[in-house]
Length: 533
Image (tube, rainbow, N blue to C red):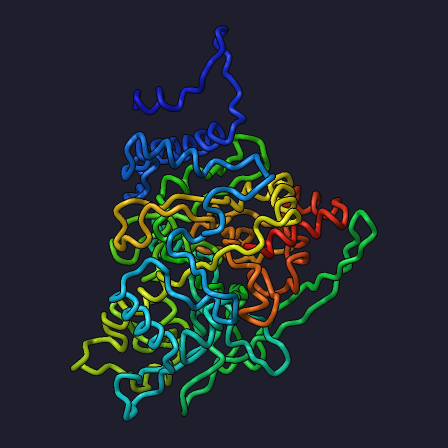
């Protein structure tokens, strides 16, 4: 403990008063210290402690650590692009021509043999599952309740989903269903990170609109929008749309009155394997849960239990950073979205609850010759590998004067307080393609209070109903090209990047105010910078 206190003691003047720490390195050090003290204090008190939350990097020697610190320091020179900025996904960056397939390319630095695994994983990602029993055998097991029949049907072209549009349906956006703890036992389960929250007692963890023959879907998502006019300082008027959500035609009676509805748009799949290999210490160094530095930004990690090791670690994936690994994310999607069991989530009936007896009486797709689950380990291996190796596309136009100006404005408005430009991934990664790569995701992967307008009122693990994980921005400028639309934020309410920025509140309110006060030329330059990512 004495060593820890020596480490956290701030530099002092000759008179003993503390020196201010206003440099990025100093602020990062203080954020790290806050978390170290929190963990150590509760350890002394005897609380359950995270086992996989290293606050220092053990994969680097002193020389490499100095290199990493230098290369990830925010730039102050906006006269030209930074070194390696073109390759925002490191050596795995895709240099293919821009097209609708820009998010579907493999990491450029995987081996020839791994390229074969990537293609097999792609085939399984696109595979349509069918209901049981069927003549296909290896493809049955769908549902019985489900949101879609294939991963690709939600992650359109490996990009983001879209909100319901007329008759287009809701296949790439769904409603999460959850309630808070209501007993001492449930509160203890949350405190020990055994669960993230509690499902609706009848409808489970999400609304399933589709069902296999002989069973009814659970109901439909209904969205109402109210237009809200926002006038910027220069007189420009922007119309925002405020959504409200409800369930129509619930097939199994009313939802529990405590159940909250949280719309979730499927996010892009690019760069996931690189995100997975960011050192925990580098994410924790950005955390400042009590805003000790007074900048109004108090990001914090969502501490979750790893599905494989059962240890506590950092959540990195999902809109609320509720999932620790791509493999667990894959297993959760198989079970929750398609109704397919895996070794990690052996739920043959997907999201069916005990109250849905007819659902649980339907046949499942387990083929004992292939194993005790519907998607055995080889399927999980290949789909996980595919998801880990979807390449980030190269930057475009990064040396244009307007883009460089927009980058400067992005920094000056304070956007990088949450949208951290760059990291260097760990050494010693399971796949060397992700090892020691300089990457530019523009995210800190922490939870931030985004204010009441974006709140969904649904707690997920440590994330409150007001908090969201900072989404990575790499590839955001290709949204229209890949997906044919420009819907942003967790529920697609924003129809442009301008609208998305103007919805920012809470910790991001100051940045939004600066954007609204900027002149039209500066706003346009900022948007051009985002379009180059």
